[in-house]
Figure 1 (spheres, rainbow, N blue to C red):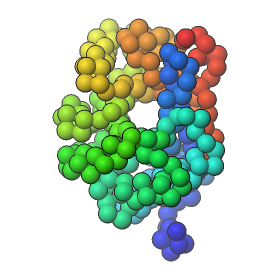
Figure 2: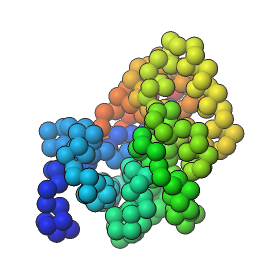
Figure 3: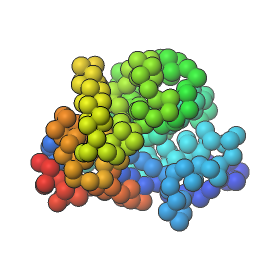
Figure 4: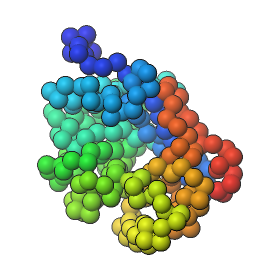
Length: 246
């Protein structure tokens, strides 16, 4: 990509954080996350991107993640790529371009998870759903991030019909002590199970949280308890934590 195209965009690196399967001890997926040159989080990085170049920058991030994965290998785990809903349909820098890049790098759709990440209301979820049908038929999974926060709620779930729902950390942070949260998460997890939707709990930071989630029936978890995002590596969940949960 020419220097003129990327002129004015912040310098960044791609980090990865695992989604751990606490029942099998394996890694379900690795989420690719943008990080600033001094370790700043993705939100800080994107704040420096002009609005007119947001879709371009997202596309560059996904491209960098795919290139890194090709070099490192995935050990059978999928790679979860973040994309804002309004960027999916972009003809030049949308998800179709990312799929073409993946194929060029020798990666198959079945290795990918498209993770819809924004808390703003998507303008046309059904158009997104229709666009990605061919890729889903070839094995790509679609995840709805931040479920339970902002606009990523029941209506988006019904319209998108995702393969994976990631429960927002706000629903998880008191799961071990709040009976109301336990009841809510249990009901949501059961509904997702009946709809053949995989559930991931985000923001898991303590063993009591993880054990409560397991008791509810949620095995897939992501958070600092297992591993922090690491630049240039595909980290594995902490072995001592996994041993205590299996």
